[in-house]
Length: 412
Image (tube, rainbow, N blue to C red; front, side, top):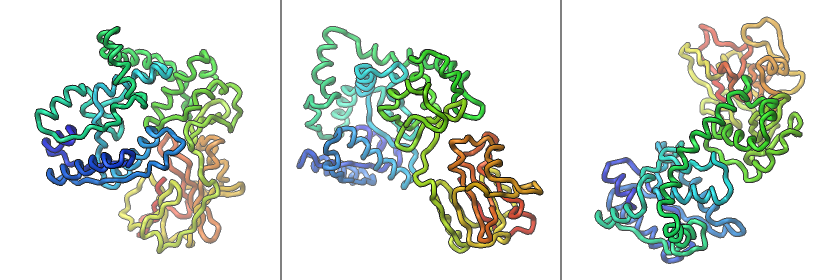
């Protein structure tokens, strides 16, 4: 409520999201009522969401609740085209976050705690102690309600706050200040990890297998966590990932370790690469010319038609509408598919084209083709942007010229 008051006082355009899990009955409803009334009084848009706590049965409720509310936050952020999700985390939260990681055995790379700005998250009160916020709220007459579950030691954070903290203050005065100093020390450790990673990174992407296996196995988790932090900064790895790291030496080409439900670290001959699992490798779609007046999304690909202004778009693929036999089929490529690449006289197999573009063997299967009604391959869409910025290759037969009026735009 103090954060909301500050945003209001500084005229920051804000939408409030209140998640009510209903686990504390009347008190949960009174908290929702307070938030809605204050927002109404201050002229702030408020979205209240009721979540079904029964979904968490058999699971860690705290983890489930966090996952669900952040899903709501991000869905709404996209809908509103907002800049940030602002949360009221404070300095005491930071101490608890770092301390819990130490107690749970996390390595130094994880001791950095939370950042004030972290992707789409904004934590403006992170440097302020809870006691100061409480004092501020009383002085400024900011209304708030105390969640009575804060007084229970059933949850790890509450145990730290209510029981362990008092004893730590007695025996180790200044321990919180020492905890907050750890992130600066971690930066030195992180610098060493980055120097090692520079040697391991492959020009084709991923990590050189020989270079990684050459260092002490105890360093593998540290290096891989740093690699993931760079490549997938907002993705949390699965709990079992670091346990599986020790098996990297025996992983065969095409196999790998699961980082999340849909991302793997896969061996591709002499390197390890990050690969997104395809939910449906056989996913395909047939689209008519009229359907593309509104953009159609097929998997990661967006297809649409537009009037051409003569501008070439290097990030997307542009095809001349009039040179296509409609409808178009978007499908996974198959052995035997050939294309006449832009600028070439003869045909080339799609398989060879992908090899020439240095698409790895484990990623090739995710490439797609655009096929016209007469069976002509109009374009090949790569599974990712290549090092020189290509999203795919179009056929010489459908290229745009000075006479082109309407185009098909393919975005990946």
